[in-house]
Image 1 (cartoon, rainbow, N blue to C red):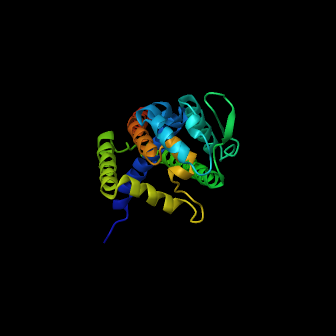
Image 2: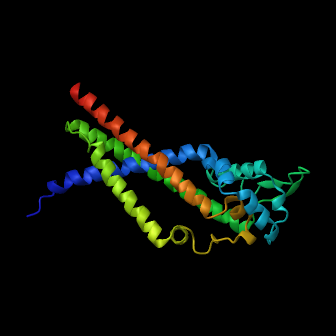
Length: 248
């Protein structure tokens, strides 16, 4: 006969690991968001300058985006970043300027782009709530361990299992194709009647971000920072539990 107690510890350990990972990913996101996801460096690395020169003149809805310079594009990305982390407020007011005359050319985003970015803002809000719930779960499990004089799964156990999951996910993404995964993600999470795919010829936003390639680099940055944060959370949690259990 199955004993439910046999499943309790693996379930708690699993919740501990998953909630730790979500908190680590959220902290990594917050840190990268605070520096605009390293857009200035990625702008140069991805040669968005030449990308803008090529596709700016082809845009159907906005003119002369190719007349913006590097500093202007960095400012525009920062403006979008700030807006989507503020429930989408301010997206309509983002304007771009000629690099030579410093005169306003136009507003950056048309209606479909604004709707899409507001959907992105809603997803970020959901991410915040998910991270907060994960933190509550994590703290609750720490209290559970403390009351029972238990220690959490060691960092080696968690790291191996987490790296295995990440590795499998990475291999899966590479097999399916990063672009296909990107498209599938949008189809799952965004309203069906809201446009989310934009050709370079119809969206300055996609030119500015060289979408979807920029998002791949940002995902890598978030993951690379999340791993040491995740390890740090677990080391601190384990050390604190050991300290408090010894001094009960």
